[in-house]
Length: 97
Image 1 (cartoon, rainbow, N blue to C red):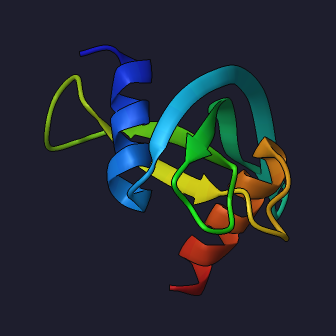
Image 2: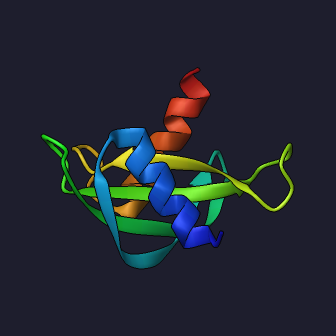
């Protein structure tokens, strides 16, 4: 299965929605002077969610399953309003755990 198909499935399973890929955006996010994310963020239009019309997704190589990805999915609900803010919020959320 290709990367975009996996990302779409991750969005749909995570949020119980139907997703359609819109575009890919390059995002570089710095945290404390270091690159926290430098890569592509997939933008999906979604249907079936009460508040969000869009979802952002990106994958990290899965260390346990070679050739597969672990995906992060973030709904476009303020303060998330762009691929960049989705990455920023996800990073801050991980740090807070």
